[in-house]
Amino acid sequence: MIAYVAVSSSGPAVALATTRDFRRVDRLGTVLAPPNKDAALFPRCLGGLWWLLHRPSSGGAEHIWAAASPDLLFWGKPKLVLPERGGTWWDGERVGAGTVPIETPEGWLVIYHGVKVVAGIPNYRLGVALLDREDPTRVISRCAHPVLTPQAPYERVGNGLNVVFTCGALVRDGTVWLYYGAGDSCVALARARLDDLVEYARACPVGM
Image (cartoon, rainbow, N blue to C red; front, side, top):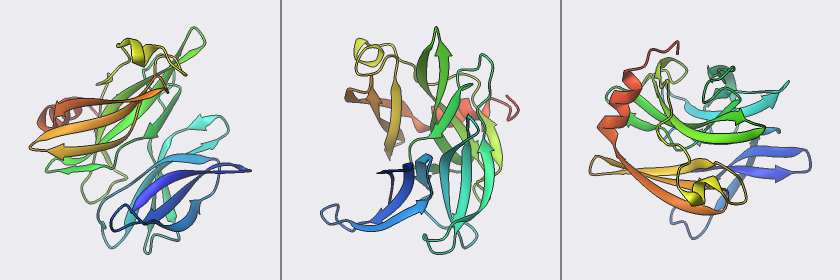
């Protein structure tokens, strides 16, 4: 199953597609109306439902929400999960889901992007949060500081300035291989121990 952003005349929307071999793709079509993007589908059913993280835009707010579906076509049970934190937080301006949530004994590890505007320029960084294994709308913990910030020249200057933005990751031998866009001009790779990311996420209280 692939969750992706589909561009329409009314703005970006969340769409789904299926594939068995990544050679042929069957589109299910738009499942969440625009303006909406940054969708991440949980890799298994929870309580008989499929769950999806997404980022609708409304009234100038861009928070991470969850939605549930019995069949991957009709989505409901909306709930706010990770709001933008405002003020001078690294994820104060907007947030959005990135990689498919990673299941761990401590909960679902969510790697998400946050934006802070500095001198009128959006700065994109990546952070982590833990969600409950059986109730993905319950936040266990959320990092106070980002785990990946733009530092390399190709991250700081490109089609965009100061951008690291991920949509994919895999876990191999206990290491998270994180593929991310850098400067809106290239794709880069970062690696981190899964246990280290979980430990850091757990160290931060949910209210932060």
